[in-house]
Length: 366
Image 1: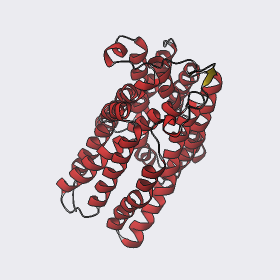
Image 2 (image 1 turned 180 degrees about the vertical axis):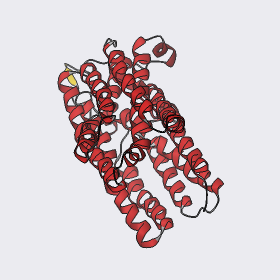
Image 3 (image 1 turned 120 degrees about the vertical axis):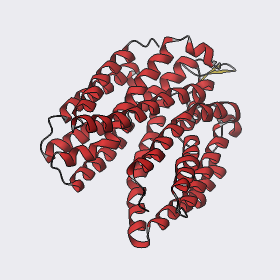
Image 4 (image 1 turned 135 degrees about the vertical axis):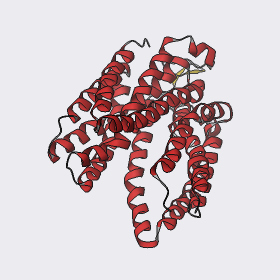
């Protein structure tokens, strides 16, 4: 349509901030009315937004259909809602289950993006949007309506791993009461989790997700080689997130989470020295292993500190800090390139923040 990059970028920033900003609201609604209704509404809105995007011809339609409606729906069907549901259903192995949802997001990208590309090449971009919308409306929405349950009590069950003592059931190592936002705001752990997750968004979605391919192309790598490295990173996301859930359930959350941030910081410093395809792929493997591995320990620490009935709202706020970091890094990366002709200072800042985030996590007291 001849739209310039800045106009398209408005939609990207709007989408990123809405996706994160709606987390607290989606989490609050999930805590109050159950995750299922929020998930169904999110899937429905996402499907409507994507289907409507297949008809767009004006820039305002792009902002409205994709930047607004689709992002609101995605915010309701995001990891915040998944964490709220997992916290209700699992008293133990919770980190592993949340890790599975993170791995599923990466696996979905690996499956859906090639299908979207095929539809675009074979039938045009409008059918690419329409195909995604139909998948949501005809496949995902019926599954959520028919098979999801808010709570195991709806099926006469107790959360997985619940310990039974006489006639009393209790979930191990967590508060069963709800924690208000005011109470959480007086707890250092809330701010330490929010601060470290801000760094997570800054270093991953905002910086690497947006600027790695242009950085690699600027350093002489063919665009297909850079794209393949991103694909490899996505595959490693699946492995790393599943492994993170297992490790956190077995060995605790705080030390592994600090280690993830520390290794991420070191890998960003290594990126500045990458000069061969093998080194680029090595970076993709290392960074991919901890790209989403921070989600299981962050979400489960939220449940441990503040109770499973507060996970939706409080993790939603913590996730919003992640998206603020992502939006800031996306802008800073472009600004650094405009001012210096390279992304080096942006990656240096991200490496420093990664190491500092490890210190923030170690300061949390469970």
